[in-house]
Amino acid sequence: MPKMRFLMPLLAVMLMLPSVAFAAHGHPVFPKDLELYWVIPFVCMLLSIAIGPLALPHFWHHHYGKVAIFWGLAFLVPATFILGFDLVSFYAVETILLEYLPFIILLLSLFTAAGGIRLKGTLVGTPLVNTGILAFGTIIASWIGTTGAAMLLIRPLLRANKHRKYQVHQVVFFIFLVANIGGSLTPLGDPPLFLGFLKGVSFFWTTVHLFVKTAFISVLLLILYFVLDSVLYKKEGSPRPAVNAATAEKFGLDGKINILFVACIVGLVLMSGSWKPDVTFHVYGIPVELQNVVRDVCLLIVVALSMALTSKQCRELNDFNWEPIAEVAKLFIGIFLSMIPALAILRAGTEGSLASLISMVSDPSTGEPLNYMYFWLTGLLSSFLDNAPTYLVFFNTAGGDAQYLMQHVGTLAAISAGAVFMGAVTYIGNAPNFMVRSIAENSGVKMPSFFGYMAWSIGILWPIFVLTTFIFFL
Image (spheres, one colour):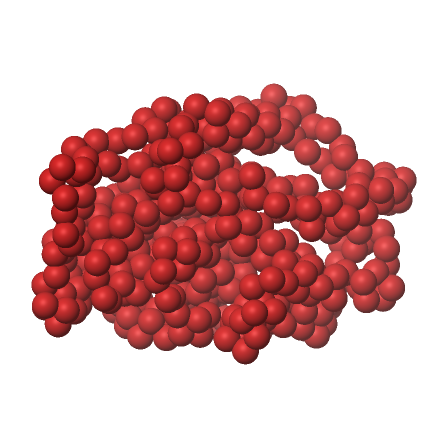
């Protein structure tokens, strides 16, 4: 299991916080006029991720978890003295209990179960085979989640191309399609859409209203990938790996029990959104709903069963190790904590420090929604913040009524598409991005830096998003 001992002191402090103040004063809220300088620790957290591996690679590799905690505390400590202990401690506990822990438990379960499924046989990474893997992953991402699809297919893709000289573009396009854009058609695909489902958006609403947009972007990217991979494949001399017929495996699946576990994970997520027992526990003033507790406990049971019932040899042959999920767990605790003020400012809407930004989504003369601005603002903020709360901010800005928004197709489609599609713009835009990058680096692929990856995404995705805007959102 990944070593997460660095979290223990933090969690201990959180759990020792008194709940009396919370009970006495109710849910504390940030002031509407919270200044933008509170976002500085979050910006520094992002810059650390971007610059640390390049400027101080040895230090970063051994201490990135400590750096993440430092930037989280860089917000929490001064805010405690200036904004008040009750307010800051409440949001810190709430963020860990209701956002971070469910987030990391879900990722851990998908990482463990999907990482126990091994495609046997020898796939040869030709342009056609690679494009087929990307297309298949894009299709299934909406049904088993972008994390599940990414963890299932990234290792077979890397093994198929082990003999190739040029591999970075394969992983980059995999992140674009499988870890992000493919998850846009159901609430199972990506967390923002699941939050929309919880708010009353019909399960198949995005399937109907984002299908053409998703297909348009996916087909363009697959064509572009096929052309690029074909050019590079020929430049390499169309290499073929040496295959020993005596030891070659027949095609098949090892660790098939994990397919059941992935299905269980999907079912547990759906259960937590549809089962409403109206039972709530208050943990140090934080309301925790029974269905979410049941989900998370069952997900941890799935992790234990997957480890117990999958052979060690299967995981070893699948190049499975805990480093990718450990990296996500360490970095995202810093991201989640330092991001608290940024989300608070966004939630303040037109009364907050980013009022001028939020007001850009409506025509100032008529008050009508500007769908292209909903698409870009939701997307750009989702690229750097957690795309789930960003989706909720703009969902509420558009009225917050699911029945009304489902009738105003363009606005809800723009919010949904922006939150999901533009998660591909940065490594932190969606959690699977980080895990895919880590798995690729563990397999010997020298992945681009934070800004290097953004050069890929801006150069390739933004022109397609601009074209999408003109076709669908104007």
